[in-house]
Length: 86
Image 1 (cartoon, rainbow, N blue to C red):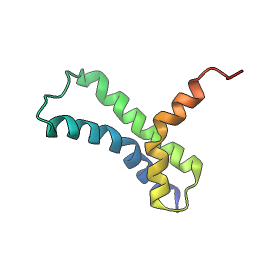
Image 2: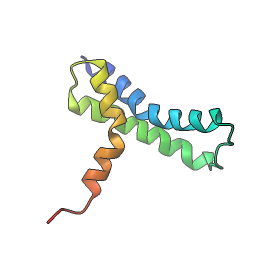
Image 3: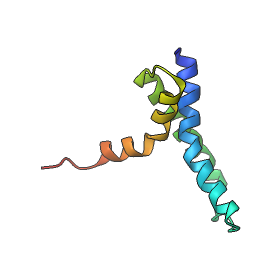
């Protein structure tokens, strides 16, 4: 898979969980939480770009693995930022 495709699928994977969360809230008939869009939008885009770049670095063999890498971004960030275990 080339780098452009890996990046695009990784971005999609990073965006999918957040979009699905918002969809679930709306589908349940609840209003979306108040969001400061001027702050949320650039952070959301930066997060999506991180998913794309991580997918490039991972060098997935197929689209599904690139989506998985992007969707796994929160777990990867959490594990990298956790204090070392003793």
